[in-house]
Length: 309
Ligand SMILES: NC(=O)c1ccc[n+]([C@@H]2O[C@H](COP(=O)([O-])OP(=O)(O)OC[C@H]3O[C@@H](n4cnc5c(N)ncnc54)[C@H](OP(=O)(O)O)[C@@H]3O)[C@@H](O)[C@H]2O)c1
Image 1 (cartoon, rainbow, N blue to C red):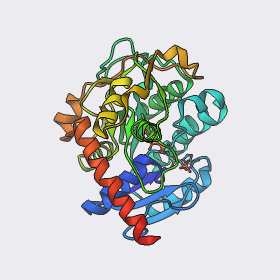
Image 2: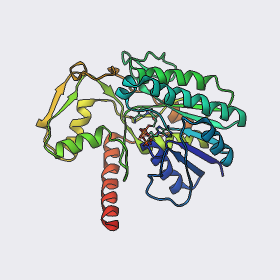
Image 3: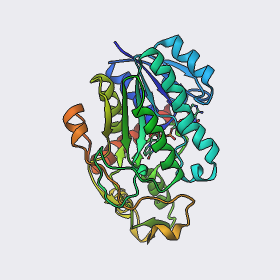
């Protein structure tokens, strides 16, 4: 059985990969993230606290467990924070990739790197894997630079590009569009939502499956892995409102420029998924199927919290 080491295992994708590996039993798992483990179950895998900004720490952990593959999910993922704190964004999103690649090259470990639709300017979505990047934000710039390093690596590598990931966890450090919209509308808060940006939102479970398929198949190269439905952000939020029968009059349509966000966002991204579907056997859920799964998970988490309280 192959051993997979995951970086950023406390994050949304990291925890979903952990969940998938524990339920499928296809791989040994070494989960790593900074600080204490935040995944609910501590059984059936190894957890090591590992800071990707500390090369000696990374080297020691990788040498200890000798994984066959590293799935690198840790990053500075908040687009506006990257704009504000460029030095830290560069260290996390580019510097750490250099560290990991040098170790993967020395030990011939397969490196699975997570990238983003924000490498594109959004003028010509949906994009295939060969489209030329033109990032509008510093986050996007760091992700392009990291991709360039990965493409030159002398070890087996995969770049998985994804879009607007949503999902729920018992213990999550940051929200996502679906949970944010649901929570605000449930509280009766009016929300401003952009109507001039289009995305293909990705169920976190689908992305986790895509990453594991890349290891299972010994894939090499760039793969688009996202949801299968294209929608504007406001349409997404309206679908969330409709699903939970929430008040749609609280949704105020605005254009992206009016929000005065630090980082510019691409207008229309989206990915052509043929390569992942044909080569990896990737099967994305529809947005409604994703929301259905989320409901079951929210119920399970509430039941679990009631049991332990
Ligand atoms: N989420 C999206 O919509 C989206 C879209 C496109 C691409 N992506 C890419 O997909 C990947 C996974 O995203 P995600 O949504 O799972 O992100 P996330 O929930 O923000 O998780 C990232 C994890 O990395 C950890 N981390 C940060 N700095 C670290 C360090 N120095 N050492 C070790 N761990 C560190 C964070 O720890 P803390 O929890 O302690 O902060 C967090 O748990 C990222 O590469 C992201 O750029 C995400």
